[in-house]
Image 1: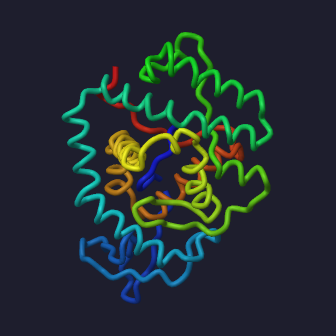
Image 2 (image 1 turned 90 degrees about the vertical axis):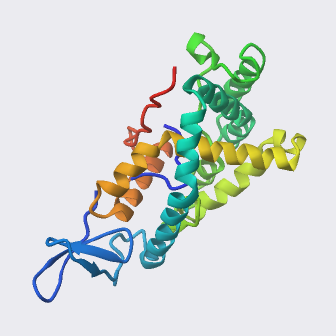
Amino acid sequence: MRRIAPLLVLLLAACAQQGDGRQVVASSGRTATDITGTALPVTVTAPTDPTDPYEATNRRVLDFNFAVDDAAIRPAAVFYRNSVGGWTRTRIRNVLSNLNEPAVAANSLLQGRPLESAQTVLRFVFNSTAGLGGMFDLAQFGGPPRLERDFGQTLYTWGLPDGPYLMVPIVGPSNPRELTGSVVNGFMNPLSYFIPLGANLGRGAVEGLDTREQNIETLDEVRNGSLDAYARLRSLWQQHRNAELGRTTTNSIEVLDDPGAN
């Protein structure tokens, strides 16, 4: 599965009892609803997960992220889906993925996987030439398969601990190691130094827009179908990252199929 950002997706229900006996279900914000539908204030007095000591602050950041998403990011993703056909979106996605292959190769090497690094270099060469600049992924015709390698994984391989769970403005779920990895990963790709700054910024914006478009339904379900969207988002992100780090045997999060892809 692709990494989901900004605002990645994620069933932890946070329930409490008010003094008058009414059940309160915590939401991702600072209000909740009792069984009669009355809005009630919710105060997070203690973390609901030992890996999340800054939960109160993280919840406020998520409120901000949701507000930005509602105002700008989701509408832009919907417009992108409705105005650009599925075939074209797939070609754009493939090109963006191909541009990241040098960083994948570098991280494979740093993780002590030289054969995987060589495989990724071959993949980049094949897709950049026969795949017409990466528009077509030749893995479906027997070419080297795509690998998921990033500097956050590299730091994990080197023994750096996770650190506390963080909700980062706009970016979404992370932790100190993964946040550092995301920043460094952007400087590891040698292609970035041959592309003008404006083009690099544009590439990042399109990557974010494409990721958000793939997860319109997923995030809608997290927000509207969860008793506690914050806790569910945290749980799903942690499960997904554990799978990418090899700490679980299966990847438990799936990006919804693109209904327009072909």
